[in-house]
Image (cartoon, rainbow, N blue to C red):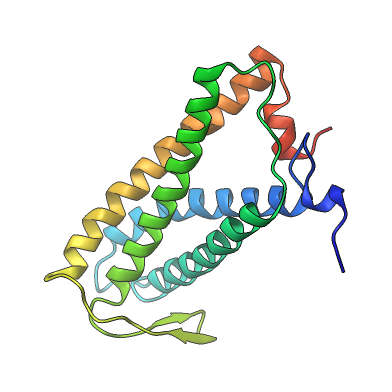
Length: 186
């Protein structure tokens, strides 16, 4: 059954599914960053040494699946056009910012997978299913991927913060519909 324009989006705002997956992924990614930092502080003798990394990996796999769905959804559904009051520089910054967010999400998620499977073992998704490991692609893959994962996640959080501040600036200072389009506040 085809979805209505209200669900899929129209020229003025994003659809409910797009808004839902945006905020779900935002909350997951924001929550995963301190969880990852906490994991780095754990020692073998900590009670959470096995449990918390398992959660982090499982949530990461779910975020990766959501990212794939989100990119496909973005390609097959109508997207709102730029807001008419935004000049060329703002429009270019918006495109570069969004592409950078998607790229950093992909790099962070793929590098996390590479850390978790560097020893050849699959990742257990909440003990429901096993996601198989691919063969190692670089020597010391766990360390190399770990550095990439940390820095891409850190840049992702910084860029997400800038993204949020820009949305608030558009809402409270410029008083345009930028934020309203992604919060379904119409």
